[in-house]
Amino acid sequence: MFNSKWIISFVWIAVLCQGVKLPDFINTCSRNDPNINECIRTSANQAIGHVADGLNKYRIPSLRPLKVPFMRVNVNTNLGFNISNVEISGLDRLHKDKVE
Image (cartoon, rainbow, N blue to C red):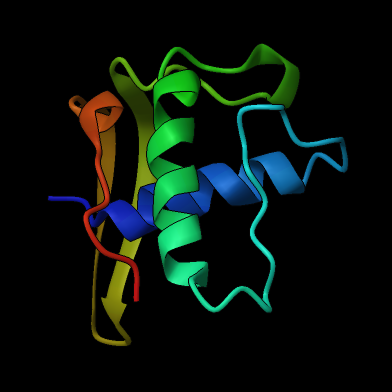
């Protein structure tokens, strides 16, 4: 099972690495906000619905389902495995209850 932190992080990195203006549906949070964790949680939950169908402008694929042709997972220096031709479903229903 995927940890939702990884999926949300992947989406943010993909958008930010494009060097373009963030979409209007992504709310930015101030580092000085005393409620930054709540701001991040709310923003992530709002964004996932928009991102679920994919965003061609930002080269973000559809999450219905997310198709992963190949992934190498390194658990530690002695253990790793390859995954190929995987379809991950349910990512469009992600919901963060808490951010720490």
